[in-house]
Length: 311
Ligand SMILES: NC(=O)c1ccc[n+]([C@@H]2O[C@H](COP(=O)([O-])OP(=O)(O)OC[C@H]3O[C@@H](n4cnc5c(N)ncnc54)[C@H](OP(=O)(O)O)[C@@H]3O)[C@@H](O)[C@H]2O)c1
Image 1 (cartoon, protein in one colour):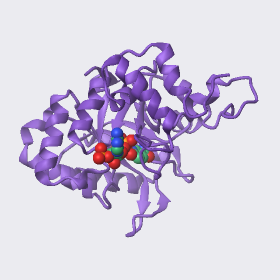
Image 2 (image 1 turned 135 degrees about the vertical axis):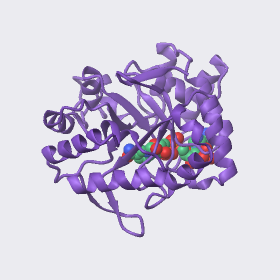
Image 3 (image 1 turned 30 degrees about the vertical axis):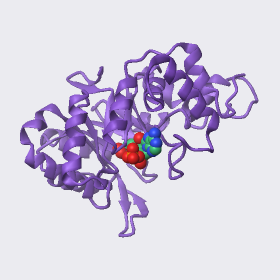
Image 4 (image 1 turned 180 degrees about the horizontal axis):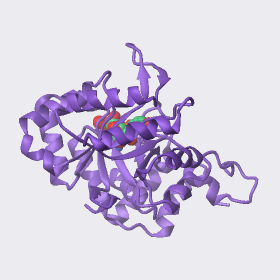
């Protein structure tokens, strides 16, 4: 598994295990899944304070860490804060205030049973955010050794610029949804200077901004098309995409799961891919695609399926 320099002193695996669905696994299943991930070269684990509801996924992971303390040093642990949910787990506010950020990190550290988060991301933009207040929270967390590095999630280029202007901590990562059925970040670039559908830049050229500023994009939900519709894999609503993944995968001796990983990994932005599978065999298949260099023709064959014809 190749790694990506998230910061000058942090080599993170390109494939990340997303921990949002962790509560599906029993303790022994989780043990197998996490040890398999480490064997595959995955050293990066993505959490959020809200996953599973009120820190439940972090606590499940923390219990495993407590039973396997020697493995902590092989892992980089990231968590996110800034979304406020009610008891029914509906989002009721976004909160990037100083107090909320500090409290959330305190809770995450306690849930995970660790002293330090390797990375903290702001989960989803708070329209009321004050860059200086966020910067003060970052300074405090860094000075106390509770967080090594900082980043954002679901932020476009202008929002990142605004935050970066207030903080001396270089924002290391931007977590964004991306995959062969969720391609908004690249659609407009391919259709630049046309009036075709998908030509409109909806995200202020965030992909190019991140590349220009050395920010790693972390592709979330790479096997989903939208937010809650479910996976497109083996889904009859996505016949062309499944056919293209099958065909390209067969050519390289990998499964469709591997072909998705290879497709994202082929992008020169050098994204991290956050796989959320809790199926250990599927995780192996995804990992097998990471080092496969697709040709341009194969990459565009997958991209152009499902009606995204090239101009
Ligand atoms: N920043 C954000 O706003 C944000 C939002 C959402 C998620 N995330 C992060 O991204 C991570 C990944 O998200 P995700 O879990 O939605 O990612 P995903 O890897 O796209 O989807 C995983 C889900 O799809 C199913 N799946 C995957 N491949 C499949 C296949 N070939 N056939 C059938 N089912 C398949 C998995 O089932 P099995 O478990 O059975 O394989 C699992 O339920 C999360 O864990 C979280 O860390 C971030």
